[in-house]
Length: 297
Image (cartoon, rainbow, N blue to C red):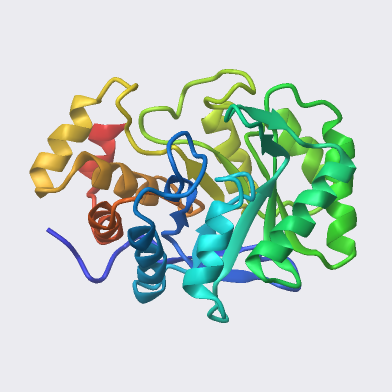
């Protein structure tokens, strides 16, 4: 069922053309689910959340995705508690551009002074002098995209940020950002179930295939979020068929499909369950055949 010698790449390089390239294992972990209901407040099973983070290091996962508006500040504080002092090869990627209101709604927080406040907050809660990778997250109601990106590159020049990325962008925004400076990564919604969906900034996909093609052409890793099937999505019977073939879960096949879909894909499946985390890790060892990929196309 599993191959120890996989044909798909085990690692991926971020900002490979820069003077500070980063090579990470090609399965990361997204921390968003380590919060309370509605991605707000403390986790209901705090000990399990901390153990999942410790297990990332034990399993060789050295790419963590977080944001100071998860919780708020919950995932950053959990990361620091579980893993500080950090392993030298750990890449902690955070996002700025959004904030939360007391009613748990999400709002843009993207003015240059807002972004600076968020960066300073991330540095403090993560106990870092420099954040290795920061995504500017486009949110519903955003305005002044170029001014926001200019602020990001300014903080990079100041040394607060090593590499700049973007999140939830469409092709036009991505290309505009690339004209302004080096874009290390893109974090967009992408998965087998959503890859051809196109909606606005409100939250679904921003032309996923177009974004993937731009990333591949420019050797920019694409970090897919919300890549797994959810209760709100129509299940694809083809995924179920392949899952049954290998005796694994549909979620595992979705992760394996992402890893096979493109060498520039860096999945970050998240979960608050240690059992599901371990299942997700094992998905990286599933070898899909070309016949499988053609069937899932």
